[in-house]
Length: 268
Image (cartoon, rainbow, N blue to C red; front, top):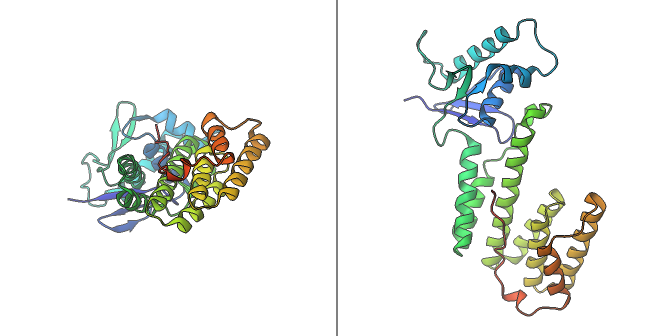
C-alpha cells in the first residue's frame, strides 16, 4: 500500500513511499498547507480561495483551485488510476479534506511525542521524557511552513506548533536536570529564554535550574531580567508563579534546591 507523508516543520515537503515528490509552486503548497492546518475537517472551496489568493484573485478562482488540487493529487498519489476517487486529497461537501495515516504528518507525530514526554515527566521518568522530547525536536527542520511565511492564515497553526516546541524544550531541560546533567540543562534554558523571552515558564525553569546547580545569585539575576523583560515588552508584572519563585530564591528557601524541576505546563 502506498504511503504518502507530508512535512511542515520547516519548508513544506512530501514523499511517497520514501521518495520525495514535487509539490509545485506557492499556490499548490498553500492549498496543501491550508488542508494540513484544518486537521481532518473539510475546508470549503471559498475559504481555500480566500486564504490562498488573499486579495489577488485569478480570473477564474475555482478553476485555479481545481488546477492546484489536480496537481497535488498527481504528486501525492502518482499511482492512482485515472477516474478513481482520491484517498489522500478527498472531495467533501463543498470542499476538500486531507486524509493521511496517523504517522504520515510530521506535525502530528511531533505533538504525540511531546504528549508522551509530558506524561513521562509527570510520573518522574526523566530518561523516557528526555528521549521522547529529543525525538520530537529532531523532527524540526526550521520554522513551521517556512516557505509560506507570507500567508497570515497559517499564523495560528505556526503559533500552536511553536508553543509545543517550547514545551518540548522545557521538558527536555527539566529531564536533563533530573538526570544531573546540570550544565546541559542550564544551556538549554538559556537558549529557550533567548528565543522565547515572553514565556514565563521558561524563565522559571531557568531560575530553578541555576538554583539547583548551586548558582543562587545567577538565579536571582535571571528572575530580575525576566521581570524587566515582561515590563518593557508587555507592560505587565510577572504572574503569581514567577513572583512566588522570586521570593523563594531571594530568601534562599532551602526546600527549593530539593524540588524536582518538573513545573512544566502541558499544552491545552
